[in-house]
Image (cartoon, rainbow, N blue to C red):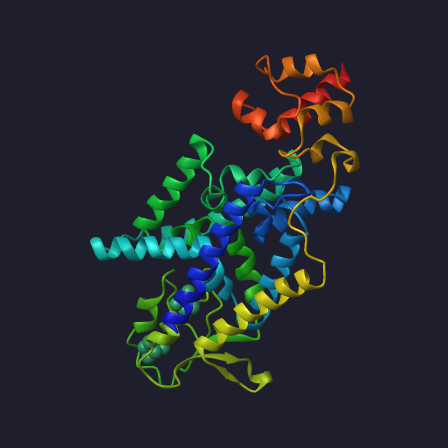
Length: 367
Ligand code: SF4
Ligand code: SF4
């Protein structure tokens, strides 16, 4: 199982890097490729508040986010949070960084049990904060503090992005799966839905010799040897505990008694979760229901909240019928800019973001 899991993890990390690079090379918009934000299940939660209220996706999110969330939920309902331990590229990078550090310095750094448990609330705080801020700012606010975006965007565009990457590397080197345990907003959702999964890791109290091998193997410090079934919201579905158990038929992935206590091998749990993920995402693509980039032209957008970085300055000015000189002054645009430059290009040179253009237009309209 170890080799297969590593192979799957490497595959998803490389594929995510490819998606980020592809966006950098061909750009966004109708003829480009979706940004890396469109390939994250949490993007669906960020998009939902405005999608439900206004019927539009906020910038950098798309229907692809909903499909990825659906694929994640399907896996959760069958085999639990295997997505985190097998598919999530950020989780894999964190795991490898810690593994590397352990080879260099084998010391185990771990906060006390009580503190470690309290820190898990960080995920709930992140979940609620990001939902609220996405709704409030009508933007993908999480990208400002999201290490997945900073890393797989494949272009470090600001000091803030570099700080995020360094911060993620630092906590991953220090404590095993620190991001997953204490900060990942998806973790709290996975834990909640994972409680409903058909198959769970169950321990046979009668044959268990209480050697603690399972608890020691767990990267998120779940006391597996002390529970009957793993339903802890910190579980990342890596199956390392099952592999570590030295007593046959003692720690197994088992369905509930109402489903006949069927056993699933750890490798099969990974195959099922990854298979469901690929089948749902691939199915959406094959049937034309997949969309990861905004294919609308500037004429088709209805509000300044829908402005995108690939849109051209001149087209934006004409579309919203705004005084160009006043807008340039508002955004402190250096003289000599080109009308066919994109908002992203001008933003880089003049220190503003695409959403600032929308805000400036709205401000001028009110005058
Ligand atoms: S070792 Fe077992 S309990 Fe711990 S995260 Fe992996 S699957 Fe979950
Ligand atoms: S590794 Fe197996 S035998 Fe040892 S404590 Fe865990 S479940 Fe029991």
